[in-house]
Image 1: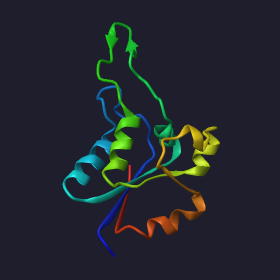
Image 2 (image 1 turned 90 degrees about the horizontal axis):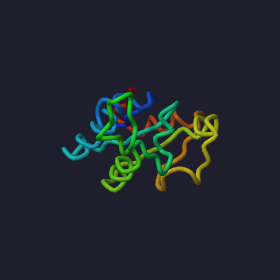
Image 3 (image 1 turned 120 degrees about the horizontal axis):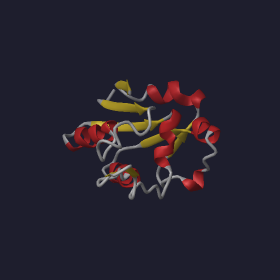
Length: 128
């Protein structure tokens, strides 16, 4: 089996207020840039990352403004452009009322029932 890796991202918006990036997406970019064949699965609340048009600019807490808001759509489309596959658990999207036409083009739906088969396509599966 080829050295393919899958990062499962389930906790949404982790560190996106303190930083401008989600650490798992940032790490996926860094590893892919270093030559790793890494791909991403969005599940649970993280399926929300796939929604087009999210804009956190203007976010503030009292007098503290977030000057570098996360750009999740850009981060995911860039990862797709670098050859990374991004899957999302369709059951989780449906549970959150998300329709496929609201999601970034290129994301691949997978059902909960198909996850074991998907995992079998990767040397290692990392859950965050």
